[in-house]
Length: 124
Image (tube, rainbow, N blue to C red; front, side):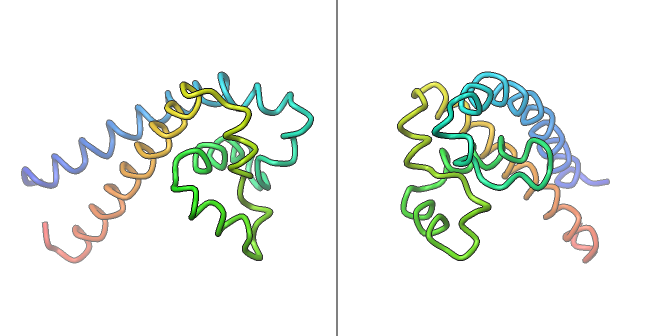
C-alpha cells in the first residue's frame, strides 16, 4: 500500500466514523423533533430503509434550494424531503448539523468508491 492509497483510505475511514456519530446526533436532535410535528410527518421523504429519512432531511437542508425544488417536482418526488417545510421548522444549528453530516458522509463515501476504482484499475 503506497502513501496516497493509505491517505485516501484514512480520510475515507475517518470521515465514515465521524459521519456515523453525526448521523446519530442529527437523528436524535433534529429529525426526532420533526417527526413529532404533524405537519412534517409525511414531508421527510419515503423511508425505504429504517433511518433513511434522516439522510433525506440532511440532504434537503444541505443541497442548493434550486436542486431541492427540482427534485421535489420530479416524478420521484415522494423519495425526497420537502425542503421549504424543513427550512421553516429548523434552526440554524439544525441546518449546520445536517449539512456537516451530509457532506462528510458524501465525501467519505466518494473517497472510498474512488479508492476502489483506482485500485481496481491498478493506478495505485
